[in-house]
Image 1: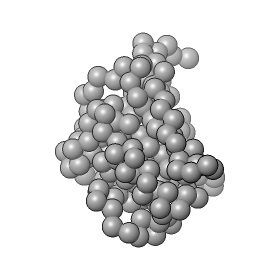
Image 2: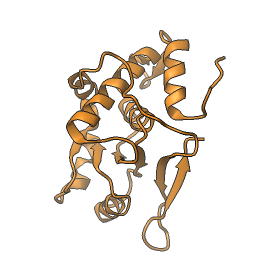
Image 3: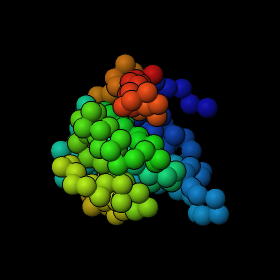
Image 4: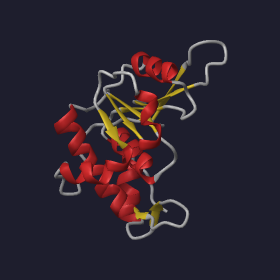
Length: 178
């Protein structure tokens, strides 16, 4: 068991990549899982891609609309570990609800699975990336395997989780790294 110097998702990603490198980390039932080392490498490459190609950095908003998948987890860790704010969106939300969340959270990019892409059928004014393309996008980032330098503190905003909004529009719950 390792000891965290800071209670942040960045620290967890860095330490687990080193401590558990060859062990299975994220995968689908019956599939070949990504190792912790591969998750760390993909996260670093995706960070480089997001920083250089989409201007994502600390405090910027990265939305996730997709079913559970290893790539969903990689985007989540990559974004949070660079100080960006992750905005996961429930898959059963309607197009109107999704567009409202993207606007309300002031999202800068959205990652969406192919299966749910139709929910973004109306024009979205931010970059949209295919969740299934995460490994290819990470390779385009050109990272040597090191996370993009970022100062992430325990009290920094890590995620905004939107409720199902039974009495109107969804409400965002802000969660820190701690």
